[in-house]
Structure formats: C-alpha cells, structure tokens
Image (cartoon, rainbow, N blue to C red; front, side, top):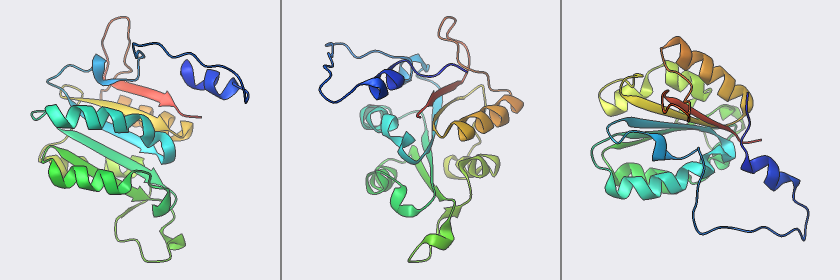
Length: 182
C-alpha cells in the first residue's frame, strides 16, 4: 500500500534542515474530496487523531447537516489526545459523536467506564449508529483511517466487506481514505 508523501519526508529531516511552506495547503488526506452530502467517520489510534482536529475545527463550525464521528483508540486513557476538546465538541454539536476506546483498561489508575477493546470492535458493534440514529453505509458515509498500520489494514478489510471502496483521487470514487501515520 502507498504511504503518505509528506510524513516520510518530515521524518527524514535532520536537526537544522530547512523546511519551506507555501501559502496554499494541499494534500489528499482532507475533507475536500468528500461530497458535502456525505457523513464522515474519522477512525484513529493514538496520535493518528492529530490530522482530524483541524478538519473538525473547520467543518463542525459550519457544517450542520452532515454527521461526523470520531472513533479514537489508545492503550490507556491518558493517550487519548485532544480528549477534553473532543468531549466538548460532542456536547456542543448534535451532529458529532466522539467514541473513545481503551484497549488496556486494566492499566488505568481509576477504573475506565468507557468503551474497551479496539476501534474495529466499535465499528463492528455499530456504536456510531446508536449515536447518529442510523448506521453509516457506503452510499452515505466516507471513512478516514489514520494511525497504526495494522488497524488501517484491518479496517480496510472490514469496510471492504461492507461495500466501501478505497478512495481513488484520479476518479474521485471510493469512500475509504487513509494515512499510515508511522
């Protein structure tokens, strides 16, 4: 599978290397390729949540019709970056659901009362449908995947079995967008 074009280049930089930024932001891992009438599910593990935050901050402020959901997995609750901000977004926006999931709840100093397991389990258990009042489907929803490559491959398999297709930037077709974050 193809990896991102920017992330490997950033990791190859050494201390003191120069980095030039243009005025126009561009890339393929954005909501620009998602039709405005399609709902969006953002699935992340650990730091894979980072690219989603600017998407949410931008689109939740203006996008009142379509639904958004974040399924964010980490080993422990303290690894759920942006947790407080995402909880606040979910409280303020009725079209947004935040589903944090912890895979090692036994490591928590205070018992974790939220979802446990892996993001794949949350998807399979149709937890988003409970929040939204309807289940996501390939005809209505685009899914973004970012984080652990094993999670991404597993989710691509699950989504493909449900009729979702990998997004092809050349044709604009497909509902699965992904970025291997390491």
